[in-house]
Length: 349
Ligand SMILES: NC(=O)C1=CN([C@@H]2O[C@H](COP(=O)(O)OP(=O)(O)OC[C@H]3O[C@@H](n4cnc5c(N)ncnc54)[C@H](OP(=O)(O)O)[C@@H]3O)[C@@H](O)[C@H]2O)C=CC1
Ligand SMILES: CC(=O)N[C@@H](CCC(=O)OP(=O)(O)O)C(=O)O
View 1 (cartoon, rainbow, N blue to C red):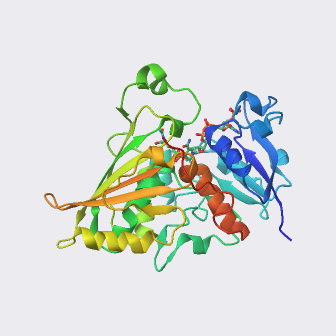
View 2 (view 1 turned 90 degrees about the horizontal axis):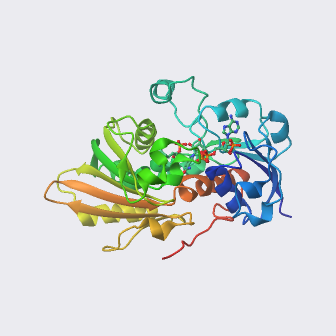
């Protein structure tokens, strides 16, 4: 007989929490328990997530150890620094899945350098497809009670580059990544550079010049995939779309590596993956093709004139980049089939 898991969502009024809820409503093995947040506590969910009709009348509670107690699974969709505090008050038998950054980095110095606060600790990393030596990260997620969900930019760049780095087809010390990012990646909190008057009809870079917090996380992943030193230039760009990331990541190729070798390596890496797909030659990833789905679409090219591998990866930042990846990892930790309840087809056009 199948078990039903009682799941709480902290940050239920936010984008990450809302997307976790949208996907959980389609999951056959869960019931939705407490919904918590901060300033919106006491209001009904319909005021914040009108698209989640089945939960319209649910009342948001404050985020406390008491409101989150007694659940099998707790998702945390809270600002950086908050989830570490909340998680510390949750029991060891509860599966806690942190969509924020607090528990992703293994090196506390990296945390302090990029986040500027005390490091909360390191949890098993929720990217099942990540290369970890001879296996992939999904092998490490069975029966864990704590999961750190990757950053959305990190998921796109890691999936685009890791097969080439693992097979030593390209240099990990000469990587350039430029991304087009939808606005929902920044969350709901109003910030001046996120005003529609600034962003509509404009492409705007941010966190330029090696400052983005996802740089050490990508480097950590590529080291797990086999890289030694990693040198990465990373530039995200806000473009006028709500969801989606298109990550173009290039790296200097080892001498003699051609497109056939690259495609063979990527096919071997991803052919068995349910959610990561190497597209056929000539078909390029578009964020539109991933909207609402848990898929990552990957394409590769070889620029012979400059000796570089070019990878392009599209994801929906709120699905494979956050909530979908989080539920994929939850399934593994609960011993459920990895794809349970996850959307597999995008919305087009
Ligand atoms: N958006 C995305 O694409 C991605 C987001 N993430 C991560 O997920 C987390 C949430 O992001 P996102 O949903 O975008 O952000 P939002 O700003 O949209 O939502 C933040 C949520 O956290 C709640 N909250 C804020 N402060 C506190 C607090 N002190 N205690 C309890 N709850 C609090 C808010 O409640 P209230 O409304 O009541 O104030 C709201 O529900 C972040 O760590 C983010 O980095 C990760 C990957 C991608
Ligand atoms: C458009 C935008 O601002 N996107 C965010 C993505 C945030 C994310 O992936 O979440 P974490 O902050 O939890 O890592 C950014 O680039 O910082």
